[in-house]
Image (cartoon, rainbow, N blue to C red; front, side, top):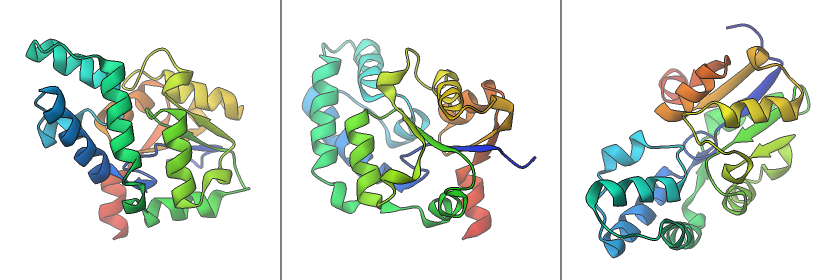
Length: 192
């Protein structure tokens, strides 16, 4: 890998050890809405916004679901458990080391309000030059739009950006954007 001129981080499962909190909120809401979602599929769909997953599941399972209401209820459940979120120290250390040296962004499928809360819980909200969220793009991960938007906001060409990402959809999107990718799952195996 070449030395990056900018770093772009996914949030949940990359900077924040929050996936279990999301999974618990998903299980709770899926049951209330009459949807089925396995834990394996939940992780495979990481990075895709909640209402889009809810709509996919509702269509597949022929269940009438208001995807926006589902998102609202799931986010409320998630926010009630923010106190359980911890940083993924090995990735946060990369951001800490690069802070103020090269431009950095967060590119997350989360809503801006939720991303701000998670970054606040981690104490790193002011570390990033840009935070790109679901509301900022038309196409979610695995589409590369969120990463290209982050690069544009940082003023760095995509080929000079390195993305830290844990989910298959995000890894694909970053690669399709022409960026170098650090698979956080593999990164953690090397650094733990």
